[in-house]
Image 1: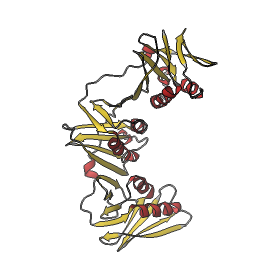
Image 2 (image 1 turned 90 degrees about the vertical axis):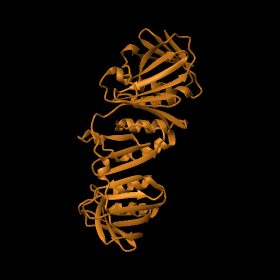
Image 3 (image 1 turned 120 degrees about the vertical axis):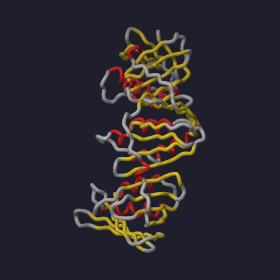
Length: 368
């Protein structure tokens, strides 16, 4: 017997959050379902694609003993979403189906047994601590956009979290650029490195941006990463690959430096990029005394040029760069002076904000 009543306003947002882990590839029928499990008048919703798992726990009214069912995620969410906002539907399992009643509406959905739903693997954590939610969001947001999407080098499709030396470091790269952000933490006492998959990173950010918690709990072991808030539990398998030694990618011995206002730089780039090559997005940076000149052109022989006031230290240099990569980081950085450090046309450019010393962004130059 499975029966409960729960307000739509309580159920729908949790369903939508959990649904982020539903398997979109339809590899197994059960993975397109959400597990509904009742335990002592608490409903736990769980979805998984075998790589990530998201659970939500909330109060409900039920006279049922502990037990569960699984329902088709999309159909169930569409039904709940279609109900009047103030309604409290009843959900009851009977004869290999679930009946959802709300006012004069009734829906009957096919279900699959709860015991077919994949159980999450339990693993003893090697590192466990709490962290401010806002700081962890900042750590991921400032680096996740540099992840690759479908690279054959699997480590590029994820985000490195390194716990060491009283700090948490987040690193992402697609082979052409790299973003590194560090967060001080007095709760980190052992070295631990893990590689989160791309989908998991996006689901963590979606979850954290929707919950009111001020702090969250994090635990990690050899094969898993988990994050817990008051209502939600997120678990992810890790990418089994070795991330490259990122510190070696940070350019040193630069002898040319440009200090420029972030907002004026961003606005100039957004104009120049209009006439840049649509595929390469290549823009030339021409460093001169007292100014930085941006030049873009395309196959149609069109050209855009703009000069911006800047503090320049070092000799003249012309270097090509992907303007989209620069825009990505400028969209994230706070309004302050941005420092570009470089040496030659074939060595990486280091981008830093003077307002955040714990953040570094590295871009490979382009041949023009």
